Length: 297
Length: 245
Image (cartoon, rainbow over all chains, first blue to last red):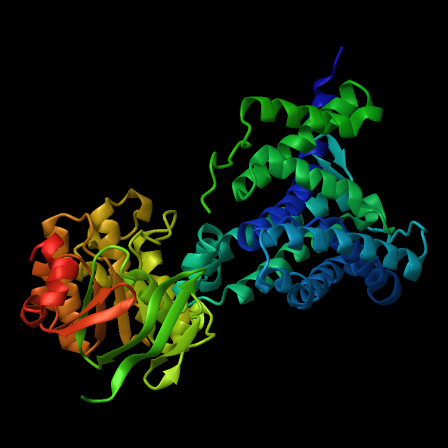
């Protein structure tokens, strides 16, 4: 006999983790939309965000001020990305080579390895926990970890803010235009390389924020970005590459499927359920739920 | 001749063994509407692409208001005050008409405020009679309306000095052709803007352009009023004989 309470509990857990996964996916899809490049080092920016959060909480602010540490962590990852992009990514797009996005993608793989190794050298392979003083919250009859709930609420708030800025600001308009045609915005007077820098910074900052918010849940160590990055990529394939609503809805779907599978089938295979969902979606809609069938150059 | 606003000096473009544009000295005075005609493959669009910085030239220079545009990224060319329209529409299909118009304004106006930008955009929406569709996505427009909006988008550059239009009338119904013509004439009179128009439509060119440049085989074959060049035997032999005026 399956209790409705267990179903509700699993659904809630799935939604909560799905929102944070969606944050990762949004970062990947946003960078892809503008820079036209898959950033494989997203997990390492997640990792950096989690380390900054850990050091801010452990050394300076304490666990009660997590809500100040998280935006600071995200902002420092933004700055890191903003200054890294012209050094590593932009040269791939300006040199006279074919298939520039391929080279840029390979650069992000090198960056992934470098950042992961650097973290191991600097902080050792240990798992660190910034800790959280947030109490367990009762949502009706359902208990939920305060740290997870806070992560989900912040994740939703940031996604809403992201959407509003994209729709209402001049920079958001330029980004939406650049996502449709890199060539078109340039002839309209937009500096595309500035857009690339900002988009890369914002995209990795979303990963950094996810890392900061999930630091007390999934802990802080050099390879902690692997799982969430894998989820992020699953989500953009399910939702459709380049689609923002796709990232949110697929993130929720993935979280729920994993959570229900872990509760009712076998917890050991939690990560496999998402891939089963991925296979099913690809069989039915190869371009993803919200993906365009053919992308214009 | 007064100092040209746009000039090319010995402008040359080679694609492998083919010389598409061959040592072209092209000058346009401020406030002029200059036409460029020529048979297919004469190098008209290549010349336009060189002028607007899409291709780097093999040799020569392009100057706007005396300043060289060589090596400028496309957005710097727009900053310098030179815009162009394309034969194939380069609008953003998933943005509204209003948003399409606002992009160059916000990209190029210094300290731009939204109200001023929207006011300017609405003026062009009225002039093009597209105002009722302002909030529709650009991809819902007909081919002719797209061409019309694309021409209007260029006028949203607040730094605009010279506007290069590549085949703005190709494949468009007469009503919209008239709207585009009226828009060009209006902006030329009201703001003394300079235009370079590439087109095959000789009747429209006669009405619009005082001076016409004929290109053949990558070179300037003749320059003058349409009637003057129509009397040139070499032009007739190379072009008008086939196309007919």
